[in-house]
Structure formats: C-alpha cells, structure tokens
Length: 416
Image (cartoon, rainbow, N blue to C red; front, side, top):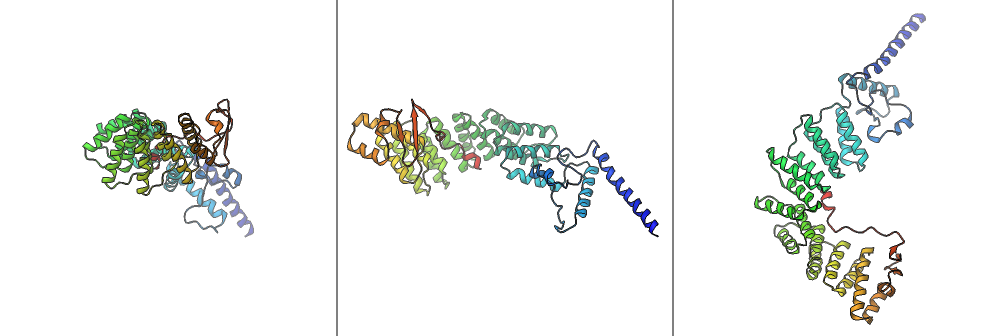
C-alpha cells in the first residue's frame, strides 16, 4: 500500500510540473499580455515588488481572505493569469477601472503617461468615454502634444469623438496657450456637425487669451452673447482677463456689472484682472474702488490685488497712493514681496524728488524700515519690513529672491 501511495504522489508531482511548464509557452503567444502586466504569480521577494510603480504591483484578489494560505493565493493568481493569457487580454476589467481611478487622481505626470501607455497597449478596447478621461488627465498637466497624439490614435482606431471629447482636447491645448490648435479643433468640431457648448467656447477663449489674441477672445464672447448662450463665471473671468491684456478697463468694469446683474459672483481672479486693466489708462481711482467692491462681495484682497492698484497709482504718478496701499497691504497681514517693495521704493524716490525730504516721508521710511540710502543708491542694503534683507551689488541681487509674480489670472482655468 505504501508503494502505491508513493507512486501516486510522484504521478501528481509530474502533472503539477507539466502544468507550470505550460505557462511560459502560452505567454509567447502573439496576443499575450504586454510588458508590465505579468500573468504569472507575483514574485515572493519584497524587493522586486517594491521596484514596480504602485499601480503595477499585485494586490489581493477581490473577496480573498487576508488570513488565507499563501498557496491558495498563488493558485488564485495563477488561475487568473492563465485566463488572461488564454483570453488574449493584457488587463482585466478590475485592473482597467483601477488604472483609470489612479489616472484621475495622480499628481505625477510620469505616472500619468505610464498609465496611458498601459491602457492603450493592454489589448482591451477603449471607448470614447475612456479616451475622454485620458484627454482630461492630459489637460490637467497642460500636455497638449500628448493630447493631440492620443486624439489622433483614437480616430485611427475607429473611435468617433463626441462633443465632450473635443472639449477635453481643446481644453488641453487651450490651457497651454496653443490658440491655433484650439481654434482648428473648434472649427473641425463644428464641421463634423457637433454643437459647441459653453465649455467649448470657454476653452477657445482661454487658448486665445493665453496665446496673446485678446481681441479674438472678446469676439468669441460677443458671439456667445449673440447666440444667447449661457456665460459661466469662468467665461466671464476669461473675458475680463482679455480686457486686462488689452487695457480695456471700461469693458472690464461692464463685464463685472453684468455678472452682478445675472447673480454671478465674480471671483478674486476676475476682480484682480479688472484692477490690472485699469493700469494702462491710469485709472487709479477705479482700481482702488474695486478693492472696496471686493470686500462688499465678501472677498479678501490678496497681494496681487494691491499690486494692481499700486501699479495704477504709479502710472498716474500718485506716489502717496502707492505708499498708502503698501501700508494697507501690511495692515492686512499680507507678506510684502520683492515686487511690493519695488513699487513702494520707487514711489518714495519720486516723492522725494517732488516734495523734498519732509517729515511725512521720514516717518514713513522709519515706520516701514526703509533705508533712505536706497532712494539714491541701489547698491546699498535694502531693508524690508521684518527680518528679510535683500542686498544689491552693482544693481545685481546677490541673495535669492522670490520669483517675479505673474499678473493675477493665469491659474483660474486650471481649477475647473
């Protein structure tokens, strides 16, 4: 009896070996899973598993017990791997859903691109909704080149884009300032019988504004009004930003009033853009009045708000206005930047040239810890309010300073 049991055990072992030998043969099939989606059991070494990106590391199968034996888990993964290879698919529906979830939340552009590659090479058919999600992820990273490439491959594979898909690829090009590509996509969309909506027009406007075509952006806004389309807060903000780029302060204020009449609350970005629009025509009264309107709307002016008003006062040679705004900025517990300081030191210098060194100027310099030497010689030490000190040697800044701030509006479209 013992010999018979031994023979039976050897026979079972041989069968098991043959079963495991089959796996490499099947994996060489032309339709086998692509690299990165291994259908064999996960390696037991923790080092090899840790070297893979998180979204490619093996996880427990759904419904599995955390207390189950290791052999049961391996058999389950082996069975899943064999089904994957026999079916010719590189990833299961659960894997696909998990990848798209990571695609929507990742903050790493490299991880996003790796996921897109895996999805396109997985062997599973991607539908129009899948491609739209991919394009939306590319928009978040302003990766317009990859967006156009994915859009092209989508059409080559016979997946017909809908209006939402066009909006996604236009959005990716628009936020990157690629106005020509955005406009061409918009025109192609209409030629193919798809009706642009407010998102389509908004993406086009963003592309035009960021591409320096502010007049065309305002024309698009006018077209939306003629068609009685819904104009969202974001579209209004883009229009006001176009006014800022062109110095069209009257139209910027009209758009703000229009927003209020429609019950749309202007954002901080909209107000800041309108304030900067007042700079070119020296409308310092309007610029400072907008600071008060912001507070009435429940908004707290930020540093850019004050910089816009200070710039308008500077253009109008209202030096005392610049100085007063600088003090107000500090009273609001806003940290002055290098740009803030440049506005106020220029104002103090011009005030000194015009009025001489009176008691008001001395008190102002003492209160704000500004060295009088800086008003005449920029090679001296410049003292900012607080502990921060910037030193200039021959007009070249020797200590690392804050980067020059961009005017007000550039990030609002990225938060949509």
